[in-house]
Picture 1 (tube, rainbow, N blue to C red):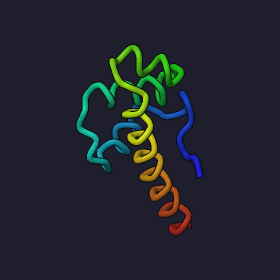
Picture 2: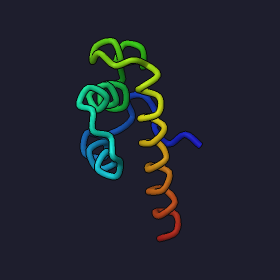
Picture 3: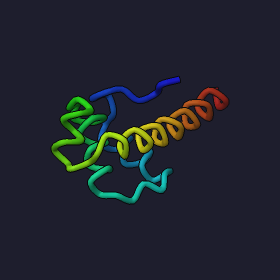
Picture 4: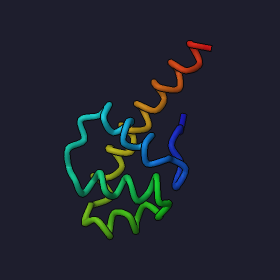
Length: 78
């Protein structure tokens, strides 16, 4: 299931989700930020930050996986 959508994350939530991953590349983080917080499309976010799309996709998938875990925890707590 997809939990993260273009331009729909707050900066704070993005930073917190990022802390749950081992993504270390600053350029990949910047591309993810541009896509998830600012709302720039994937290709442009990658191009602006010098990230190859094959490197962007796994990072986005990992971040989405962590967001899914957070949502599952929230559901459990209700």
